Image (cartoon, rainbow, N blue to C red; front, top):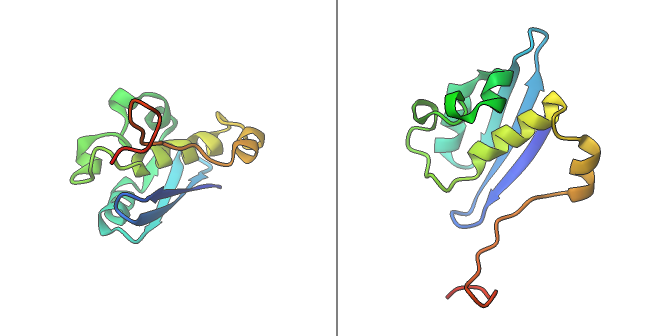
Length: 115
C-alpha cells in the first residue's frame, strides 16, 4: 500500500490517495478528499493497471472520461500516478522518504511571488 497526500492550496482542498497492489497484478485506488469531484474521480477509477501507470496517453487515470470536470491544474491525478509508482516499485520508498515531497512553486521573472 502506498499513500500520498495532495494539498491543493489554491482551492484549499486535501486529497489522501492510496494505491494498493492486488494479487492479479492490478491496483486498487482509494481517494479520501474534502472535494466531492476528487472523491467521485476515485470511485470512477476503482482499480487501475500497470499500463495505466506507464502509458499516459492510454491511461484511465489521465482519461477525460475518468477526470470529467476536474480542473486541468489539479494535482490529484498526478497523486494517483505517484502513489501507483511507489506501490509498483517504480519509485523507491527510500527516495520518497528522503525527498518527503515534490512541489509546484509559483514565481515571477525575478524569482519572487507574483502579485
